[in-house]
Amino acid sequence: MDSPRCVDAAKAGCGEGLLWDAGRERLWWVDISGEALHGYNPVTGSATCTALPYLISALALRADGQLLVATARGLGIVTPESGEIVVLHDPEPEMPGNRLNDMIAGPDGALWVGTMSEGAKGPTGALYRYDREGPQAMMRGTTISNGLAWSPDGSRLYFIDSVPGVLHLFENGGWRKLRCFDESTGKPDGLTVDSEGTLWVAICDRGRVLGISPTGEVVAQIDLPCETVTNCCFGGTDLRTLYITTGTFRMTEDEKAANPLAGGLFAVAMEVPGLLPHAAHWPI
Image (tube, rainbow, N blue to C red; front, side, top):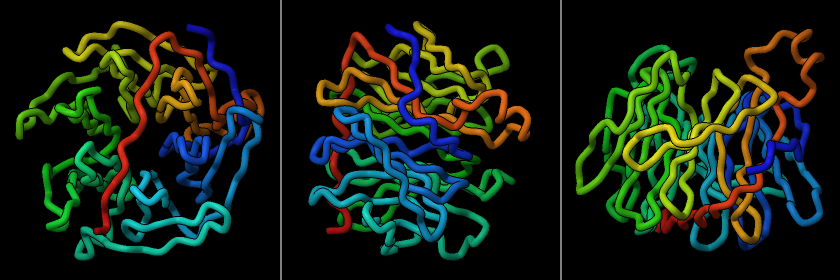
């Protein structure tokens, strides 16, 4: 694979929420702390940034093409051109210290959404599945409900809880731990899966993305020129580009000045293509 190149030096506080939108031929991502929605067109190389009224942390496509967003106030829909958000549902109205974090649509159209305590103060988060019957808690006691990705055949859901550093696997109706990360690997954050089933996991404190086999072994490594690496996803018309978000939230002003690419969006040409995201059929 090629070395990562910065395609948008956005200087995001916390880049996240990558989503390839094939219908618009655009990559969407968010700056959580900067309360902004970013867009990138790989054909023209043009980038956009739309201010938002409050924090959003993740994106998913709805079957009608609209952009679903995980926000500080619940699940909603965002209008990319204006940044207007319409909130649809909050799964935890009784927990004001929690907010939504990551989410993904499943092959059956259900929407999986994770929550966390603001500031990761404790294991008060959960992972919910939204379908025709409404939300159902699929796991509780999480700290930072983070990376979510499906295997190519849709039979496996991968899920990361970042603070304990656990990569969970949901298969055949049950959960098990696929891998526990430690000091030798760093803290896992967002992830994606390619068409051969390899997981690509952003390591938020080591400046890298790790390739992980479906059985949990490290098989590859991509090094970034900045320490805080937050998420990744495949995009482009052939799905052979791995896009990677980074952040500056751990850096001093002097460190930011010394590393102007930190907080940027990076791209890496990959040999194995990725997968198109599933579309959510929620709300019905």
